[in-house]
Every structure is written in structure tokens, then in C-alpha cells.
Length: 462
Image 1 (tube, rainbow, N blue to C red):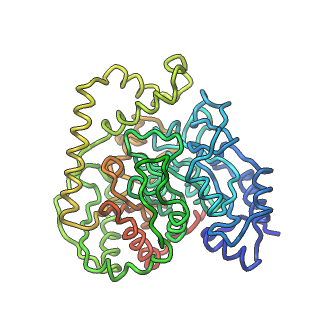
Image 2 (cartoon, helix red, strand yellow):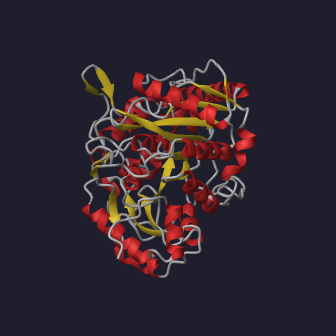
Image 3 (cartoon, rainbow, N blue to C red):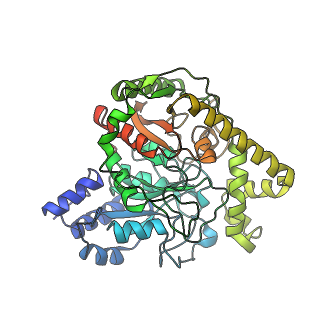
């Protein structure tokens, strides 16, 4: 009998199933027991009986056949709670299943077993809500997982399950990946379809996965990426994400990379900046990239990003706003109130102009280089229960100090990958590598090279 969840990646778990060393039913029971025993608070809902039925009939010849799968609670899974991590919707039930989850289950063979915690409506890069309380980082309890894919990152890095869904509208895959010591990929906008019933505007959100290895990410792309008519901006199917992982080494050699830990816009902790600078140069040597100096100065885009996303949030709330204001986290309520008072045609015009300038700035940088390396987060994981404008001594910490390094790539759509690059003060540091639109495979190829050169712990030692 399996007494603990699999501690390697999801692909190797499938291999173990196929060899008969484990069964999906045994793995599920070990996973459920570990979740129940965990104090990380990574799950908001479990469906043991539904998952047991699926594990019993799992086809291990599918890409993720029989693998227990956590579902980020901002996604819709028919018959499960559809809370948006908000107390206003605590009793709402999903009437359909998201396209990516249908593909993951029906084509990939995963066994969904529960919902992982997220920030309310995905609006903050932390794991704190009125509905679920505080989610904790498995590297150090009491520190944040980041967000909004908070519970997915905590569960995967915490050894509870090998893989879980994620989404990234401003860093919500990459930020928790960086804080929790995982690889985290934000693909080119539209790479994985977001339907059905998806909000199109402002086209900053992408679907993805929290995983332990590059090949897990690539296999998830093989299963889930590709056009769907219910997301009119989804991209055509591309084959061979996993099969071609090692085929890009020759194509990558000689390409240009700029290592700019702060992207010219963020205040990055010196120890983090130093580690990222070293790791970027090490990655360049390992992959045969040419390091070049480029004056990269990305614009600050927090306001434009927030304004663009608040309209869909108001649409989600409908007539529950403003009467339900006190049920929301203070930051979300404040953002809606600010938008109502400040939003105008002139503000929208300025926001769109800023977005155009951002696109020109990023495009001009990629006219000169093929890759830009930066930190993923300005610092290591801050205290888990902090709110906006919290200070530790003279330093402001918390969600408003994050996002400056990740949001630009959501605004302009470029793919970017966070890679674990070691520790500062015992906590993981993430290095973000970004490239041109539609060159997602280059990033996964670089990730594969880094994984071989500098393997990271697949689960947190704690």
C-alpha cells in the first residue's frame, strides 16, 4: 500500500503506474490522506468519492493517466463549488467545466480530486481570503505562497500532489512558482484556450499549470494547448511540446540574452538580484547564449493592469455590488470603489495609450535580443498574512511590491518562464526568462537545459 504521495514529477508517476509499481487508486488515497494531514491550507474543497470512481477506471496509457490533479478554485468544474474564492459565492455551483480541464481529464487522463485555494477573483498575488483564510508556503510555514495560484503551488511544492491547474493574469503562475521553488510557465496569450463563457477583455489572462518539472509543463501543453472556438483568440494546435524538448539546443546556441534583474522598473532585493544575475549568466553558458548589454526600462503598469481587469470583476458581481462590499477582501472592495470614482473615457484612453507604449517598449527590446532574464519576484516570500501597505521595519512588503516584473508580459502577451535558481535566506528565488511571442518552445528548451545543469528540489524539504 502506498503510504505517501509521489514525490517526483507527474510524468514519472505515470511511468510508475504503467510498470505496476503503484496504482491510481493507491496514489489517490495517499494524496487525500496527505491533504487531510497538511497544515498548509492549500485546498478549499475535496471530492473523495468522485475522485475514487475516476481513479478506479483510470487509463494509465493516457499522458497523465491516473494522476491526482488539483483544480485552481477560480476555474469551473461542473458540480463543484464556483466560489471565485469569495464569500459572496460560497454556495454557488459550477454548471460547466472549463475547456482546459475537460482536455486535461478526458484527453490527458488526470483525476481531479479537489479545488486549490486562490486569491479572491485572482485579484492579488497572495493566498489570503475571507473564505479560505491563509495558505502557507511549504518552504516555511508563515510565508506566502504568492498568488493567485496559491494553493496549487503550495500543494505541488508541498508534496501533496504532483500537478495542479493554474492561471496567470499578472504573474499568478510565475509569482507562486518563484516563491515555492517550482518552474512556472506563462505561455503566449491564447496558447491554452480559456473558454467556455470566458471574459475576453482585457486579454491579459492565460491558462496553465503548476508542476515540478519542465517535461510536466510540456506534456500539459501537448494535452491542453490548441484552438477552441469558444476562445476566439486561442492559437492553433502545435504538436511535440514534450517530444521536442531536447531538440532546441542547437537552435538556441548563439542567440542573444540580456540579463536585467529589475527590468529597469522594480526595486529588487540585492541578494535576489545578485543570484539572478549569476544564474542568468550560468544559463547563458549552459545554453550557448550570447550575453549582451541592452538598456531595458519597462514601464510601470500596475494601474493599467488593474483598471483593465476591474470591469470583468464588476460583471461577475452583478447586482451584488455594492451591497456585498463588506463580504469582499478590503483590497478588492477598494479597487472597485476607486474604479467607480476614477474610471472615465479619458482614463481608458490613457490606459490604452500606456498599453501601446508598453508594447512598443517590449517589442523594441526584443528587436535587440531573443531573451530577457530578470527576477520573477522582487524578494523572497514575505509573511503570509500581510495586506497592502504592510511594512517590516522601514521596508514595504506584500502584494503591491510584486507584479512589476511579471505584469508587463501579461499586458503585451509575451511568453515567460520562471525557473528556480537557489535560495536566499533559506527561501526560493525565481528567475524569469521571457522571449518573443509564439516562441514558447524556446523557453521550455532553456528550462530543460537549466533543469539538467542545476536541478532543483521537486518538493520543499520542510
